[in-house]
Length: 262
Ligand code: FES
Image (tube, rainbow, N blue to C red; front, side, top):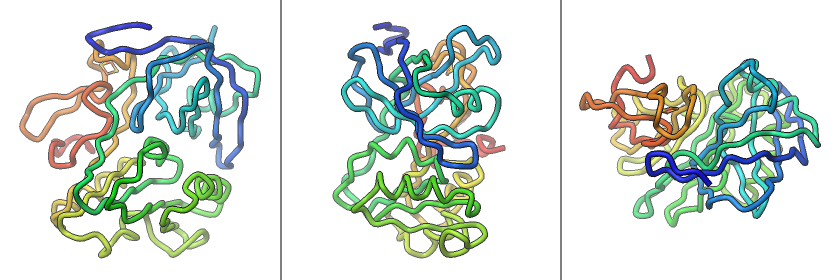
């Protein structure tokens, strides 16, 4: 185990044991670790890289979608070269991981709570314990090419209330996750969300107008993941700065400066 700036994590070489293609360049990756690691909780992430690969140089931050004994799983979507290499891994290949990183998401226990996810961006909340006031999941997808991802998520969320929205109406009622949440959310509720920045910004704006709390999971490029490089710094509304990797990745929408989504 390593300790940097008070943050405890492991650096290990794991082996991909299972890959499920979810279409559209996305995949569910299950990795076996060589030994025990510090406990992983919902909202935390890992930096993944491939041995002997220097391009890209930096690891790719991925939320831990499941952690059981010596296995960790991730939802990976091809968004560039690094994530593409990971999404195309085949069982038996080695993966270097630094984990767990980031603070666990704190889900309110004293009010109605919704979980909102933009397709496979929902990964950080998949391990979150269901709070007493849970109202349901709302997932948004672009089009029918995300059908396999939706079915995989349905399986993981079996038994929980789930609303699906789709930009072109092919997988559910036409609209996006924020519009599907729409008037169902009440003042005083809390919406915990992760996914594309446009979705998070729309939710943050809606929460300010609607009087509900929005807790938003941010994604940033990361070099170290433990607060050392300042590469993931953002500005809070009060002018102070925060590092997404150690102060987040989840932040109260009220904390965030207006330029976070610029
Ligand atoms: S990634 Fe280095 S400080 Fe956040």
